[in-house]
Length: 179
Image (cartoon, rainbow, N blue to C red; front, side, top):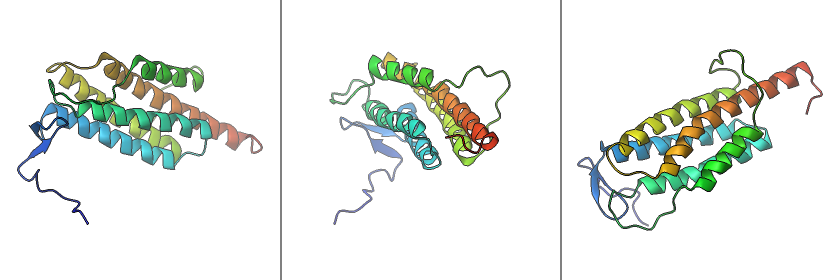
């Protein structure tokens, strides 16, 4: 059986797609780590959800975040065939925001509530950090504009889902027969 460790990162470097080595503190590696953490946070949020529509949207996001991670794992100038985030992914994200729009938000929304709501807010905060680090990387190295657009929309989607779930839960509490 193969070992689950390689020892190749013991000196603070990791291997990017295409074979290039990079410091674990390089902005690319930081961005990759944030996207990985974001995907895990979305997995936690999924475990707390009961609405099939919310779960479907979060599955779509997780799948696209794998593409984001793969795209980020290629060092600038390296030759590696990887999937890329496209305008289709951005449009699908926008369609999901529009479909789950809970209506006008007229008050500040505190990042709390049920586990289902709180985990979406946590994922939103992680998404914002991932976006900041990917944008910081894009200031140093070329970046796919659709990937940047996708990450920019993601925190809006997660906020929308949190408000949607919170309002749905409130409606069910006020009307026990609501389904």
